[in-house]
Length: 620
Image (cartoon, rainbow, N blue to C red; front, side, top):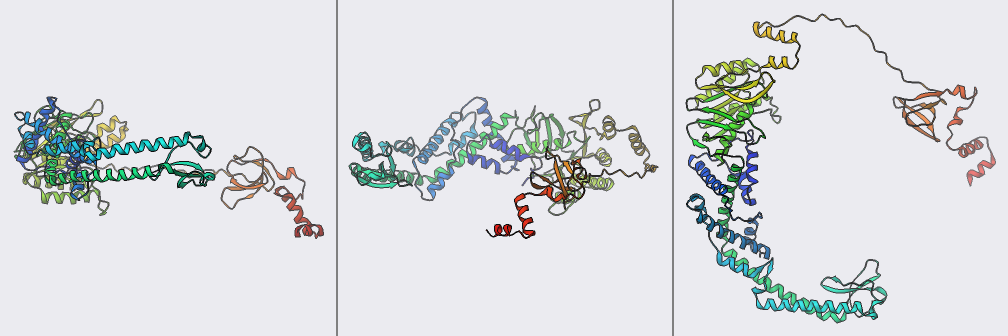
């Protein structure tokens, strides 16, 4: 199975699936593997090309609706009887199969491959005719059975008679005083009238139900009991006849079930081809040419998932096994890798490519990618360890028909060792004949790619005036990371840049030490206010003045007395209004300020001094 997750081919699949009509085709598109056989891959592209021709000529293809047909097949297969709506859907399916055969037969000269699909469809026109004759507008038709038609007429007359009889009850003065409400209410297939409970024995009929509070009883009048019984009997006969007709039609479908399944497979395949063609047309795609010689040639191909992508053009022939891409970060290197990966995947899936001219795409049996952060948290591996584990797997499994896309190869460790490993990997992969595209910042890898004839180099263009990447790939060039240039344009101080340039030129580390003295000054800590019991203060929570009672056990909290209630509030923001010693005479009992209930306080004082009156009051 090709690894296409990191190049986001799954997103392309989903976009293609949106163009499919049937749920079955949507599922098939999302699950279909890439084709690694040249004949089969070209066959997919042939199908897409013919369907694109049909779309470009504005021809309307008859197709099934968006409802899944598989559940109906499964239901019949299990022995269940189809309802009228499902039978109509089966007839519609037969009709579409017939129309598809006729449509593609007319286009045989222009679309011979698609027409061959139509040739395999089995036409069940007699069954279609029978179903449409017996089923109409979601129910069994009167045409299906003469006795059924008579019973339905009889049932309609009974319904009319019952309603007319009940209306007479509602309009007769004798019964109006007995009615709780002037309406007919159906209860469990019984037509009833809401009668006041006091008249339940006076009003003739069967009590079918009553209200929750018992004030109303629902009575089926005596005059319509026999009518209702007859109506129920007629409806049972209707049900039996309808069930027999539905069962017979379902049995006919069961007899042709293999043909239904075969036709469904063909129609789903056609739906998938149509979805591929619609997507290819939507992106302005052109059919690629496939090869087995690892030749890659893109002509201004656009990344299909980006809004305003810069077209990519490049060429790798059989003598060049790899492309090493250099340049600054955010310059488009990773997008280049993904574009190449998508070009290969889309071609093997039978899709056209969004390019200005025909692209040549190598058919790859495997696509290996190492793009993005590979940190393996489940196995406690670092980014570099996880990358090496992945690279070891790639080296062991890669063949000459493998496309390998490597982003920032060798990064995440010591630059010298990382570059050495990267060069060794590239050498091994190119000797296997793999097609390799890699991005790097390492100078050693750049030097290797310029000296090894199996590789070509490319640089991502960068506008030095605007300090922005152009995202254009410049072949046969080596790009610089532009780190110092970007740093300078971004406002990096000159002394920092000078140190960096000196180190690059000489390789000598700057080792001068700082000579800075620090004065040991302690910041003054702003002290929080301190209050005494009985002080009048103001706190942020209240506009009025409150009394300070005590400091809370909680840090930086105080207990105040306000509106005859003790409350704990933050100390921060509290301000002194007037001290207690200024408000009350010396020796004053400050506890009197914090009494919540004066009557209770007086009673307790009288009890303490032994008042008989207070003790009598307490006993009471």
